[in-house]
Length: 300
Image (tube, rainbow, N blue to C red; front, side, top):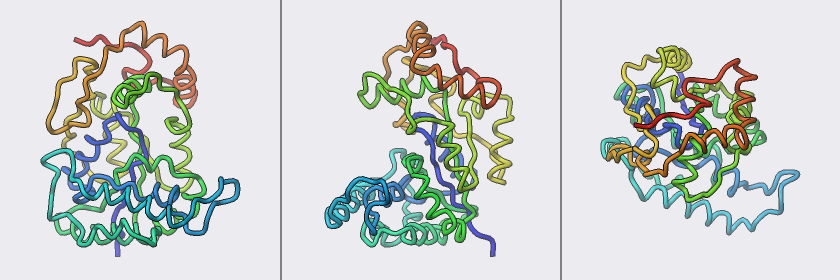
């Protein structure tokens, strides 16, 4: 019997992760159910490791506290519906979904939840299910090594990172989250996370600007990876980039934050200081920068 697809987002906020998720759903590829994302896997690793800390990890918090912490976080997520009106689909809600927020917190619990979701969405012609949580990118080499084979036993796993010009992505993230300065790190390193995931699972990196504004090559690459046609891309507030002129969109509230102006002078300063290595590493790997990367935009 053919295994259902399990799409795991392992990418970067403010890179059109939501429009990509809605694109998959509206093209009948995968569906994440009633909840767009559940941060189960990162909670399982960081808060719910039943056997205690791994070698080299810091001391273990008391198990009772960890159980309460993961349950509180996941239950909080499950209390709320999606941010976009059209995506609230009660018929795709897994019965007793709240049980995922209770122990024993194992990878089998994650698998069972998504197999139950698959039983619901497959009747509408979807090829599989999805977990669109960007927090998946924080999973460690150890966690992926421990669990990748079990995931692939039950699913045709496909991991995806969608990326955006590093400065404009960081500018949107930092200002929305109230951060004065946003420095690159492993947690936000495109190539580091791409290499980490593809070591254990089939992984594909998507350049946002190329997918929505390119010549169709990026779309064809994505269709080949997922083995499914994409008839129409969902609208995207970041492409074309409107910067501080961005207008509110009720269907994409998470893309509608009002930003201060990213001037050409500030962009160039960041381009040649804190983000210089980011662009240099990309050019070294792929030979050139993607569409619109590495140069200021004229917003009008």
